[in-house]
Image 1 (cartoon, rainbow, N blue to C red):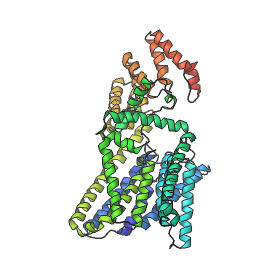
Image 2 (cartoon, helix red, strand yellow; image 1 turned 30 degrees about the vertical axis):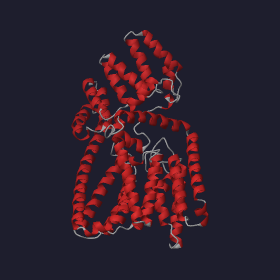
Image 3 (cartoon, one colour; image 1 turned 90 degrees about the vertical axis):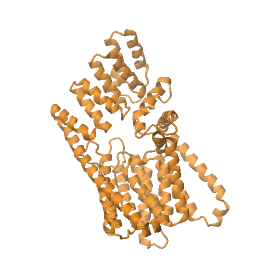
Image 4 (cartoon, helix red, strand yellow; image 1 turned 135 degrees about the vertical axis):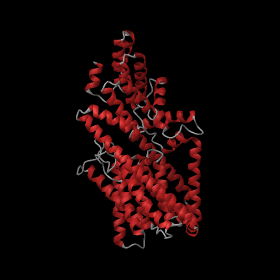
Length: 519
């Protein structure tokens, strides 16, 4: 049974790194989650059987580390081949993505692997083994550098420095100069942050805008937050409010449709407030106290892995990907089991309770995943039916899928668009409003404005166009639609004012469409 779990763990990690699957509408992230939940459910079932039959689970940290290093090395190799144009990237916008949708996911995966590679590099290993692990480390490091991920480079640098300080902490030089080394490390981190900022200043300024607007969200509900999914639900409204107050802001050209604050701690605070952040802090303290009670090599490298994720979380969104979740759970269990493993082994009632809970969760996970797969496949068929011109059948299928996908904003937006194209404006606006309960979005504002325009409800059309205009002030479409609408309803002065704004507006990315609008 334990050998079976090891094989399933290989499949579980592979599932979190699985490539694109074209049978779903989301070809990149969703397949990873579906594969992870399927294999995870099977792994959970096997572990629960072991617990309920009074058998022991062999927790072999080294074997699992080898699995992680092996699969991440393959991932890094795929990314390097993409960079060399020997393999096509998963995205048209980036030259290196591995099996992910962008370089951030690729870099997150490789950075999390680094501590496991360091764990395997031991003095008493055979020379050939160490050579393999060193080669793997160099491939991973090359992948991180080629990804040009600033968060990845910062995380890797800090982890390597801390590892070498810990490894050689008993050397006389380090003992005498620990204060100087700490100051040097801090200076080095600040230097990397400044270099990262000026290397991609527009990208960094865009994140500063997002953090500024996110801070306004936090101030409105600091203690308990706005609830689960609050960032997607409210953020773009706050960004629109910011640009309405600051129309000449230097951030205007950088603003875009945003779905994540690029900082996991801000995301937690927005959703769960300072209480959520406090709970996270208590978990960190608990884990560190567990390590202090039962220090071990495995516990140290688990903490180092969690630290790598924590550093990355300041500047990106590592928990968007199932790989991060699986590795985090593995590290948490490794640290806690070292301290409280004896309690777990001696208490049959505790083991049985954990086994029953895990078995229930596994069955529910497998059942819910099978339902989601069926719904996603039907949605994909519906999209293909629309492309084939079978609009009426597609709309009936969309209505049926509302039961299973009615809480998915991407599905609701697609349904809204199809209803608009079919000139069913009443239902279009009804579904759009439902979508808005999950999602504040630039494109959603535009489609509602178009529906109201076609229904000759001009005041509401203007309201949605104005909101879209402030959400993404670099875009020309909302202004042009406003210009056309003001002309139609006879507000010539308002149309002229918008026309002047369009003509004098700086262009972020030149295109023939923008040239046409300005002309």
